[in-house]
Image 1: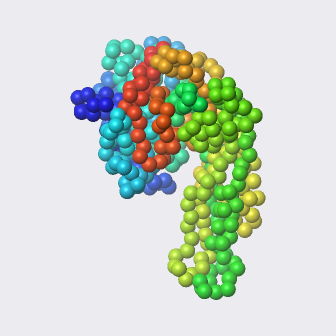
Image 2: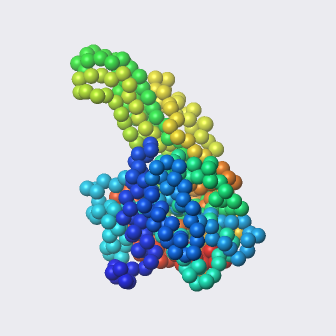
Image 3: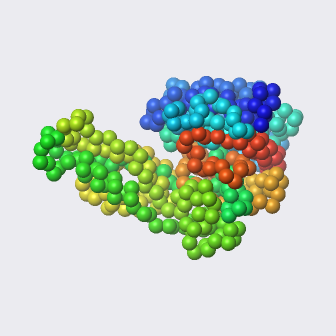
Length: 433
């Protein structure tokens, strides 16, 4: 794939430019900030004749929005949204500079190539295709780019819907990331359309003990109590519980692959590199992600903490928290750091039909399968305004690419031809829906 500036497709150039803005979000309010990336996006939107608005409730945490008038103003508006922040990247672990936007082997590499500066670029260029042709989308589009999604949207979409709710006047549906991409299911290509998200519950486990000298005979050790609770929770095998979405996903994949739908894990396993991603959607997950204790080798601390990333099936949050408290035992406190709702919308309706139809026009005969995402998006914030959110970042991917494994992983990369495909599918959708 040629990579000179003149031959690089616009969608790849914009994604590359966005990757080169270091918008790392460390969480907890520690972030490089999205301001320069938001200004870049705003300038692009202005170049299309739109009037972007900026909202920066916290210094450098910048959100941007523009409304595109549609042909039929009587139809509800559609929100197209992305986020501009990315999770941290340790350069020493990567094959390339994670913020260089390098093009190699027909792919664009860098932090955000998968999550989600690829989709940001696809949104911009799809809207650009329509407006530069002198056309209008079928309905009003509300094009929005949020800050702080990688921290649960606390300093981004949550504040936007609270203080700039008028941006979304007239909208009933939204499209964003982590759906619409292809997987290989037992040698057959299929597309996953995201129609739900598990609930996000970030908790802190806290154990208390008695401080003492490191050489003492000591049983009231906070680190020991915490370690036992963390190990018990981290090794818990949560049972499979199918929702409406995952039941339909399992049935459709089983029909496609010939797997036995009685064993949902086995069905998910037929999707190869995507299997781990899909298996997480079938059950609650509780993964330890951080430990903090002590300040000197020979001092037993009186407090120890652990961070746990809990993803519960929609509607089961309180039951899951009660079970976590039972698992870790009475000597470990469970504190909620951040919690957000789970979502699930039907795999039916005009927008679903339109997304499936757009994919079918560009990749005929390939089935589309609904799924419940294990992570979360800014669709959760928009849901508080009554807006139903879907994941539809259409990418036709090579069968051997571990695309789902690159979310928050090392050596993120996306094929340039997949970006071009996604731009075309999105523009088709926006012209017709």
